[in-house]
Length: 302
Image 1: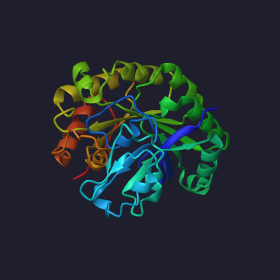
Image 2: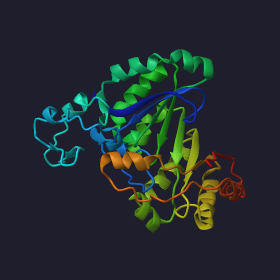
Image 3: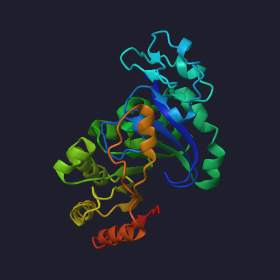
Image 4: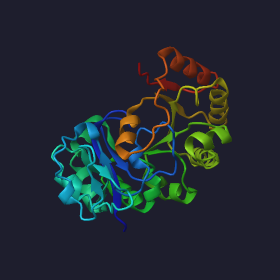
């Protein structure tokens, strides 16, 4: 059984399924969404993050790099990505966590033991464990095994997925999944390719197959102003979901939390000036979807 790679384990989650949950964020994602709020999830392997605002210029990281990949030309470290081999010894030496490792390898047994500690909260609240990311289905062998163990202990399981995965991977976890949180973003093929890196065809096909298989599924739509909040896209989503059997829909408001994370990865954030949609806009989108007979809940950030 292959080990898994996760980058966060978040306890007391209240928005990733019913009850109090522990959310496991897994590394690796086939999408490259411009608004991604977890850019550290895209690479399937552990990464080095650097927060310059935390750096005190102590130079503790310099002797910690066996490859000499770190230089400090102006009181802040600069890391050569070619020479760096991700040993993370610099992060281990950093006293302020300006340098930080994102991602760790875990075995099925190790993760199961960690998750089992929260059983009392699950039982009292009707909660459980949610697997998110990234795209958890990219680590499907590991995912299926840990979910099988959790279901063996009657722990509720949720998969938060983009749907961009082979159907055989989806099938592998079906017996152990109590609920799918399923992202739908953009239905126009060209716009989807531009803003997410994929056409969306596989996502739509898997949605239809999951609902046809009787899976318990809730659709999540992240509302990204000027990108997927157009009347045309909302109408297209409404038609698709009504055709698929009217699953529950949850609208999620855009937020810019991914911007600082992108900076820590040394990557460009493509939507630096974008603001969260207004309450009125969120309610307008919800009303548009309800015209197709959908049950819609709306998370509003102002």
